[in-house]
Image (cartoon, rainbow, N blue to C red):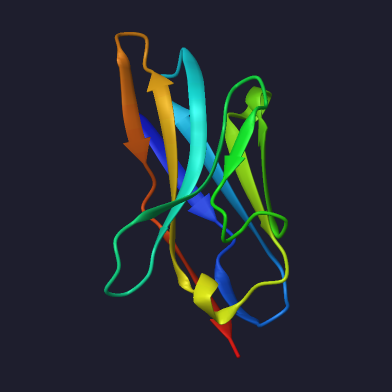
Amino acid sequence: QVQLVESGGGLVQAGGSLRLSCAASGSIASINVMGWYRQAPGKQRELVAIIGNGGITNYAGSVKGRFTISRDNAKNTVYLQMNSLKPEDTAVYYCNANVNDRVSWGVYWGQGTQVTVSS
């Protein structure tokens, strides 16, 4: 069994910063891509940023230049540094990882963490 646990969400004023963390635990042989997605009320879940195990990253256009994704492979943890936050960044942020649990590859999700940006 593999679990992803997020932390670091909260309430911040526009222009502020937050750092999200997501730690994977359980029966893990290796992790390939890790990423962050978000879902605002009434909208579909969307990609925010992803990072491969070699460090290659990809960002949604709306966050490029403001958000930075990184990972610590030794800790099976992925981070999302969010700067210059805007009210439209308000959403539940979900961690995602492609994990080999020593049996097969599977996609796992965290429970989500709320990020609220006030104007």
